[in-house]
Length: 338
Image (cartoon, rainbow, N blue to C red; front, side, top):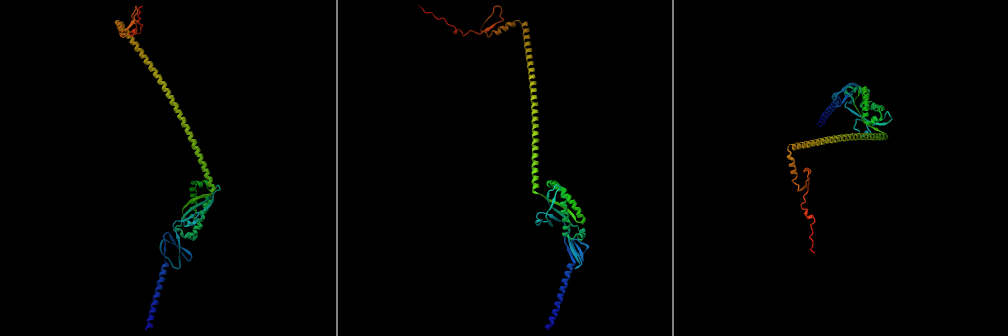
């Protein structure tokens, strides 16, 4: 009895194990059949080493297990950056700066960033002809950007690239040329950015000395202009003062002339008034002869004594009174009796 029970148990356990293995195989098969594609990427199906041309957009897709393989291609914007310290850069692909030479022979170092992406519609052709994304960066992005950056630097002078204005023209030129090259391979250029251009220390020192000299020239020119302006201002002030003096002199002369005319008119009026008064008195004396005697009496009011000529009373000369003068006259001395 015990032996039979053990055999049945073994059979049951065997069936359970087989069922578990079948379930596990089915799960693995389902996992290999359905493959998710992450956002920002596309999946390219490779069958026996050849791309089928099927592109899986982000989501869950079915493929033939053990036959179809998935090649993941990012379609988001990626960055290739050159810097002095690539190990600390946060770009997707990092490299060292590009050394170049300007048209006037100055050595420069260009630090730039290339922003690019692989369009999903052209991902099959890009991977088929160029390779995976890392190979696209190495063979297209890196090769052309470093070459064009070095090439177009020879079309500008060091001063143009140093001043700042020339950098924008240089940046636009490289961007246009790089966009044309990327278009040949189906890679889309989002932007080309020149972050910094380094120059030799000797050139920077020469530029600084030149700027200092230029500033000194501008300062001297400004001072000369200011002196000329001050000179012109002083001339205008002198002219204004001369005109003022002239006007004041003219005003004084006119004033003197007017005062003289006024005084002459006053004298004339006084003379006319005096002549009129004399004429009127003469007429009055002719009409009233007694007025002469009255005037004579009126003039004698304050006269204490006087000398009158015998012939006429007209030239009467008033003399002061001799009152109080008796005291000063010598008094006769009494004679002594013998």
